[in-house]
Image (cartoon, rainbow, N blue to C red):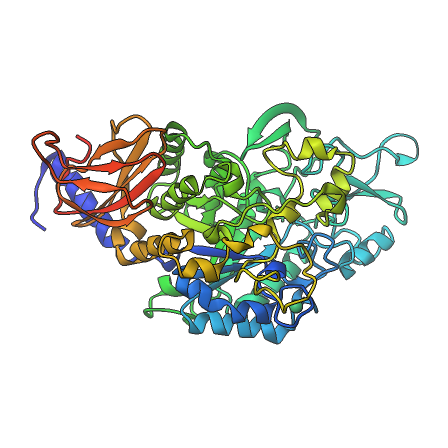
Length: 592
Ligand code: GLC
Ligand code: CA
């Protein structure tokens, strides 16, 4: 480095420092996550229910796909009223999913393949069948009486809820009556999921003990369920009305007294400190001996504006990552996408990392959001895997599984049964955000057969198999170079082969043609240009110089390297297509 003075010299110097630091970035910076919903991924013993040994049988799919981190939704002991998000023993495995040894084996087998493993921690609530709650509800003065959030009611006999706090569905009170104690307990999600009282030190210690239990067994970190809902206003003040949209879901109440509180940010710090106790323990998949490689990570399921959610990072001492859910309800519109990228870039500048999510086990499949148009799904996959941030792929997304229509009357999802039993089917089927989460939890489609390779032939699966199985399955798509699955593989491969894509900075390209957007990812000399055409017409996007195609979503995408009629080197993009280009040389003139 030559020393230079003046503003240019300083900014170059800063850039050089940042580049050097990037080289030492912790592993999770370039992480790619694959979410497995264990009940529906792979059934190893023919009971129609997915299980932990099943996940192990299919781990090579993750390796083939090219992801590096597995997130497993809850498989802990549970009455399964909310399919595992209602835990009754945090340190054991539900019998239908296997034994404790199967969880150990899963960690071991994943690590052996170079995959990291994240488990799903439900800290906000337990099942009402958890022995702690059974004891807590039995009287006002048992040793666990204060482990949950109990309050006296209002009105005659205290039969009116203590305040106006709502459950997450917002249409009913968050309070449930406990007959034995003649008091109310808070249940923010479903009545069968009483909220733990995190202001009780014994609760904190006991929950941290469960966290350590899994860290000791070698898990690389956790996805934290409903993390922003954990610590509530200690004064139990009423909520005020304030209709808004959060992550594409309408909210009627201002939830600030019960969501994303300062105390909850403090809890993020405490949990991180627990993880740090393990910084020196084992290097699970480590490429190197550095602490950055052993770091255990926390990624929060939180809801709010990017600005609010950033607080959970606590300046590097809190969660490493928070899910940003805006793209779950994306608008297929370049202006909207551009605005989100700008917001995420501004709110989570390096060394923070934004996250990008298009699907999960709770929300409508993306193919259904784009009217079944696979070309659009291909464009979105390209965004997901080339933007700066940690991408998550939900099982089946990579083969374009769509929602499986299941009538509300047949729903197993407790959300439907608890909150919307009155909803007419005609209304539900017109909702953009489908109520029945079963529709996105049907078995993972490994092959085109009636039981899709998820279980043995003839077995009744816990939820019906989607009829899109004939084309949307791993076997068929693996054999087809033009399939969605092949595109995902190509994108993951490009992402891991090019540092610019997994660790580089991102600069949006100004002034691209109508309907398009483009950005440059760069790392040192390496520069990758991504251009996407979300418009109805074909478009020409200037590349600023010679380039070569790394991945294209459409065979018709073409580079034009300058001619008499088209002097500037450009890429021709049909409607609904995208391309990832490696630029030659460190030129800075893209889009100019
Ligand atoms: C989260 C989970 C969802 C679960 C709920 C209650 O939102 O993603 O599946 O039902 O929390 O734990
Ligand atoms: Ca099974």
